[in-house]
Length: 173
Image (cartoon, rainbow, N blue to C red; front, side, top):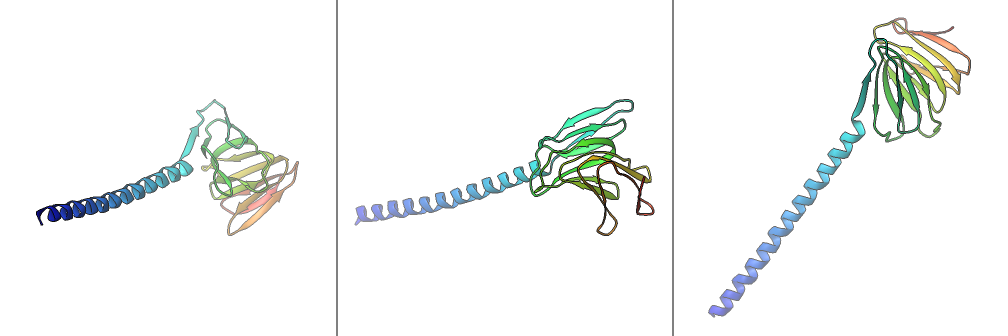
């Protein structure tokens, strides 16, 4: 009877230990999964920020092959890698873009009170947040100025426009 009791206690102890180990393993797995999710989300949303000093210029090559030449006093933010259905960057200043073609993932330049959407093109953009006007000059491809409540203005090669952020109106120049 004593041997049976010992065997029963050992089996019960082994069974309980196995249960605790399974619960601990599940908890570790969930924690690891959530940690990896947070890390990948942070990598996707983390932006590199460049501020060009007065009198200087800078060149940036983005992960999709797009080249950006930044002028003096410009601020530019971009992700290390473009994920999702669009390639989105942020500009406060002046830049020339040579955007790599990708019709499935438009390239978006977010500005103060407007944005530019392209799929592959070359254009000059002047959009300082402290100035009332945005100037866009298109060399190749197509550019769409997105502004106001879902309004847009399209440019063709050789065309230029000035957009007044206060009056919310684009005009060809």
